Structure formats: C-alpha cells, structure tokens
Image (cartoon, rainbow over all chains, first blue to last red; front, side, top):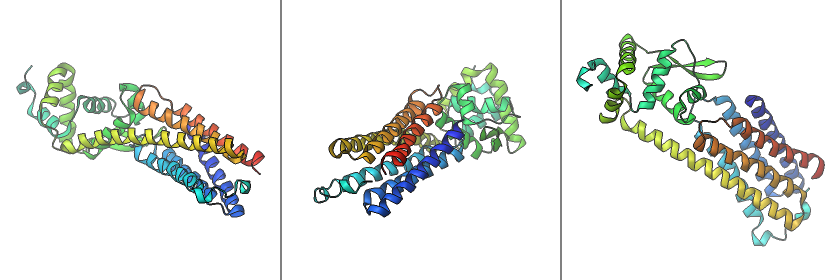
Length: 93
Length: 216
C-alpha cells in the first residue's frame, strides 16, 4: 500500500512541477520556476525513499526535501522583496 | 558469573564486534533464524527499537561480514551469513552463553572499551546520525509550515487562488513532516508511514485540483 501511495505522491509532484513550469513560461515569474524545481526535488526525494527500502538509514534523503522547502521559502522571500512588491499579483494564473 | 568463565572466543568476539546490548539482540535474533530475511522494520516490530537505528546497526553488522544484504518480498533486508567458520562458531558460542549468562555478557559489553572493529566512531557516528535525523525532520516540518503560512497569508492579502491551493498543499506536507518526526523519533513502536503518505498525498491532490480546476 505504501509503495502505491509513494508512486501516486511522486506522480503528483511531477505533474504539479509541470503545471508550474507552464505558468512560468506564460508569466516569466521566477516564483513559478522555483515551485517547479521544488516539486521535482520533492519527487526525487520520494522516489529515492520508495526505492531505498527500509534497510538503509534514510535520514540523509530528507535533506533533499528540506532543500525543496527552503527553495520555496527563498522564492517567496524573493517575491516579497519591496521593489518587487508592485509586481504582478495579476500575473498569477 | 565472572568474565573469566566465558570462553576466550566469545570474549574476543564481543570486544571486537559488539558495541551495545541492543546490537547484540539484533545479531542473536538473525542468528536464531538463519534462513529468514529481515528488514529493519520487521526487526523494529520484533524488538521495539528505533527503525533508523536498527538500519544503522544492520549495516554495521553487515560490514563486519556477519550478515548479508538480501532481497526479499518486503524489500531489501539482511540475513544471517557469517563470512567464515570462525565467526559462525563465535556467534554460536555467544548465543549459547547469552541464553544462560545474559547479565554477565551485557556487563561485559558495557565494561569493555568500544569494539575494535569500527570502534567508537561507529557508536558516535550512529548517535550523530540520529541527532542529524532529528534536526532534519524538525527543520522539514518548520520549513513546510512556514511555506504554508506565507502562502496562505499571501492569499489573504491578494486573493490569488494559486496561493490558496499552494498553502493548503503545504498544510498537508507540514502534517506529513510532523508525522515523520513523531513516527521515526518519538513513537518508534508504531508505524505511521501510511498516515504520513496519506497526508502528503492529500495535500498534493488538493494542489493538483486547484491547478487544474481553479487556477487557470
């Protein structure tokens, strides 16, 4: 069951990443590129967790996940920088 | 029961290979069922020890050529497979003595200096890895919770739908990371992996729903 769920999670991350890539191509808003990369990193994290099995210490794999979250936090901080504040809420799809 | 009564073979084996009573329990469990393939999760269920730590110890025992990495139905795991007859005989002797002189053996493990095979670096490395794991899990939770907070706050300020779905997705991911910490560090006796995966999947499906139906 867990393998099945992990497969779904990986696929959901990949598809979400593709959506963000499309939004980025449409708007050229860096935040979308950051989201796309972050969700693909999450997909890599869950793929490695699924294939590594339980017999290896896996805490190092979660560093990849942490990087993805930090990446998004950095993207949001970048988006909220004062000189970009007037940027494009309207550009969001 | 003094140490002197234990055979030298057993004393030397403990000094060279065993760092803790729990590591010994793992080795003896696998020795007792030599035909069986064990995953860290199965040993965790049997002995009620932290899964990550069990995986560490299995890797250490495997490097000491006492176990062999095998592939079973439940995924990769380990099987008892001493590399040479001397090791096999030492473990068999240890198992026999352990059944009748458990306290003496445990005392010996903790009174002798760390095993010479990988010596104290293993013990410290394993402790370091556990600490690092705790820190990484907590940071994952804090970072994902922060993402969720910032995205939902952005939604309140701008009413941008994408931020709502992104924020909700990260609520699921934050719950997933909180359960990860609880599962692997706090409540090591119960397996929360199903709930962890379900919360992450739920969050991601909310995001996909939003991206497909609402954000376009």
